[in-house]
Image (cartoon, rainbow, N blue to C red; front, side):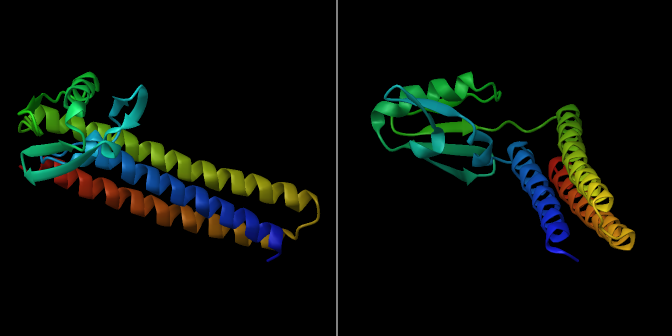
Length: 187
């Protein structure tokens, strides 16, 4: 295979990897009944006038399965952190004891679990669409190259390789979803 074809194959593989990594990040944000500090990773706190990620102004931990502890590095940051968590629309109610902010994670109802599975399924479908788009773009590039003189048998090989990659990544996406669904539905 020539270098240009290999370049497009590598580019498609990178896009598929990126879709998989994005899915992993998005699924980690969906809470599964257990306290997971990752659900706070998008919370921004006003730190001396600058919106700053919570993880950069405090230590996040999970001392038990139903609690997230937020230990600010500066005591003056307790009120802004508490306000940021409330304003993040995560449905969490922070409790502050003057030195530490505790967030109790309520157990999920059956209905809420089903909603979270649907949300996870939506993220999974988005990842699959991204993977298929990477395959489609690769095949379009190869078809243009055929018009410019690339042998058709090489083009067919690339298409077969692209389909194989798409199937492999699709299988990985399904595995991610199955793991997350099991996680959410486990009481």
